[in-house]
Image (cartoon, rainbow, N blue to C red; front, side, top):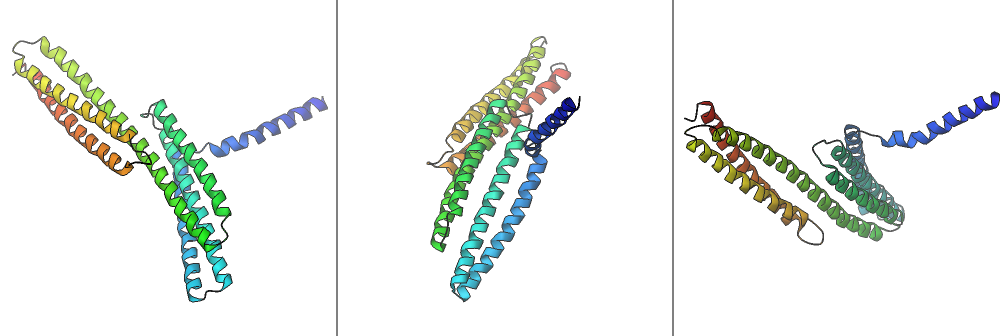
Length: 264
């Protein structure tokens, strides 16, 4: 009996031990955002220490002050990587918790986050290997390039999320248009109503065309290339699509009011 009891206790302790990493990783988006804000503040503080070290070296270029620039610079780079890592984890959880984002897009965002987290791990190795001020500068430059790649992924994913939301809005407008058209077709003297519905349908189709154009532009937000231009183009097409949807909705409202008034 004692053996069975001790075995049970050991099993429970082992289970609790194995669950600890899972519990630590099971953060919510709001908690992850706070982690990012904390990391951001820490990064600002470490950067200030590095700036002070550079000022001290400029005033007195001793080997000790030179080493202080290297050491504080490495701390600043690692803090920056911590900030980016926590930001990526926040955005990943934010997308995961958003019920409006489809599973395939969530997976794409997750894959991009994992890819960028691997880049961060590689950069940590580069930072650890820094021994001189020259190597510190070269590593900083490399980090800028990787940061551009990260922003490119984020911009593409953001665009794809906006496209998905715009598609859903267009589906809603189309649904109401079909309901109103069905009601109008059973009415006498419905020509004016049908005309309004046709105008709504034209605007809706223009919206869908512009949403498709936006999606095509966002898919070209990659490095190498012109990611900022493509992202801007996508935003412009979505802005036009928004105007199309607003116009379509206005025509539907007019048709609805005419139906309520008996076709007048």
